[in-house]
Image (tube, rainbow, N blue to C red; front, side, top):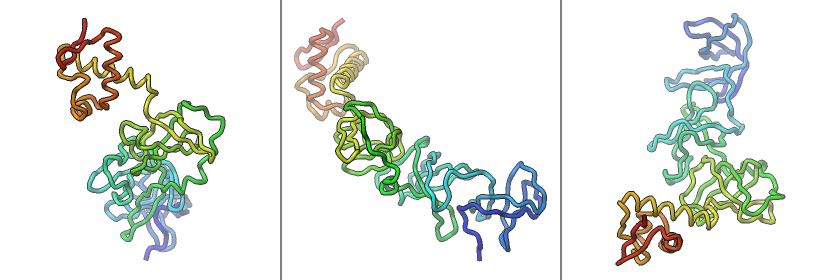
Length: 282
């Protein structure tokens, strides 16, 4: 029966050298230490223990960013849709987050490069797994937002996603809520986002929008239409009476936003409409 739990740090004694490192022991427990460092027999060293894919007990002197019973930030390294995502905790082997511990919709699963706040756990087969923190874990992290102005830019990492919206932990450790109407696409768990403050609440939290301000959106929509016209040779079968679904599918904007952008471009004499079509003016 294994005496020392994996996923934690232990002081173990160097017993003998091997081709790739050393055998370290504590009591009746033996582990393989793969290292380029030089040790002497009987040296006592601190190691992190885990089981590799071959079910071998491995010791490493690399300091992990998180151990069993603590939380820490880790980087996502790979995503496997039928399995989950792998994260780096600062040791040679990456650690799996099972799909059951990720959001139900794979579209908001983290991508490589995203950051997650996780703890470690050990399953029934003694495998080391990572588990993302729930929002409750962040309650001691959140700071009270004060001296924050409306439309102020905030940046941070998404720590929760659900149907109503997403929660972001800002760089200042403020809690920000992003309602589903305040983003053009749903952010991923672990994604780093930039938004703006649209409300500072009495409880010290923020409401955040990932959408640009209205005049900025209008400029972006107009640029999208102009780019489409140029690609289409200066003529398109879309106008202010076109079908709303066709507009959204083609331009990724609502019909009302499309019409506002068309109106602005016509006032600037960059386009004109004739017979239900729109033409680029030279």
